[in-house]
Image 1: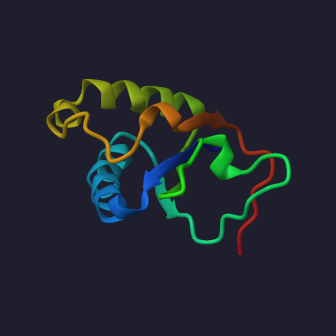
Image 2: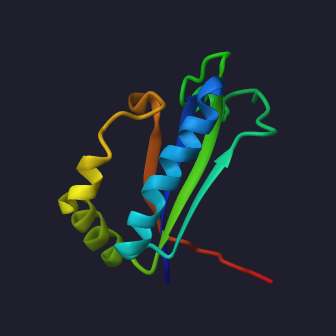
Length: 119
């Protein structure tokens, strides 16, 4: 079964286009190194929760939006191998480490799907 890397990222609202361009530059590299899909979603309807919520999870500020992203891989092994190749790919380093968001507040993790249905 597939494997999914998931991300929740606080991004300054006025840097939306910069973030989109950043993500669009990196997505082809993930695909080249084995990912099957890369999805970046700009928060559109992200309500405040009673106990916790997406904004609270990343300590989003009033002028920030939450991005919900995922990368699908054929397997965890393919993800591990792909990430290794990405770290060795000189293009990753040429693109620079400047991110249009505070990477320290990004949350991420790897997930094994337990239910997956499609039409």
